[in-house]
Image 1 (cartoon, one colour):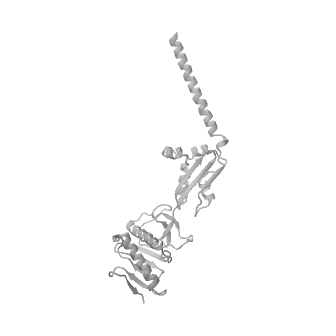
Image 2 (cartoon, helix red, strand yellow):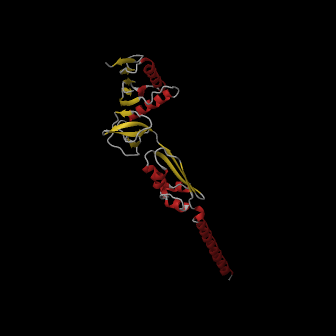
Image 3 (spheres, rainbow, N blue to C red):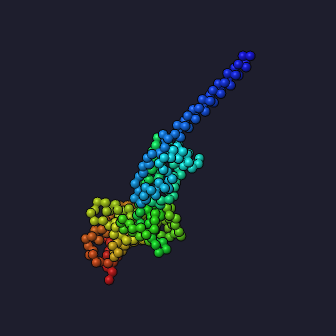
Length: 277
């Protein structure tokens, strides 16, 4: 008799426990899906290249939608569990990254009770790469951002001599000679460093860079002066910076505005100017 009473009490306790859990889950679910958590505010990092409307359309987010329902719909499967746990909309983030080549990183986060924040960082165009009669706009990592039908805020140098078969917008170029792009990138960064403390800038006057040969890197300046910097992969940063600054002094102080020719750093200790007649 006592054993039956114990079993009955245990069963009753389990029923009470299950009912309590069900009621608690129901209450939490009712709270989560209540109008209290409807999205009212969507804030966004300002983009230099895309409008707020374009980015919002890609995310499919809108005011009035329940924040938790939207979060679950944008979970994107078990592989995105970590993003879901941090209240991030995985599918919305992926849509931004896949749809807008200039966007480097995207975070779309639900901030309870009623706000969504969209943070993006963007890639910076640094050069043009010739391709089938046009120019691809690329960033410092070789990602294709656009084709040159859009006007640039500043002139960009053309990187010549890169070998590749095709490209995909928003993805890095698959180069047969990646060392050539690496040399061009090193040169561009060093030019910017050399310009940092000077009023007169070289960046903006560089028309093209050709690093396709391992023995010599060339740059064309102001469409009239060709510069042979030699094998820059064998130079230290300080040595390359010295050559850039040396050339700047020659270009600014020694050459006339109508001079044309070659400044060669490979013919001895000091560079030589060979005029073009």
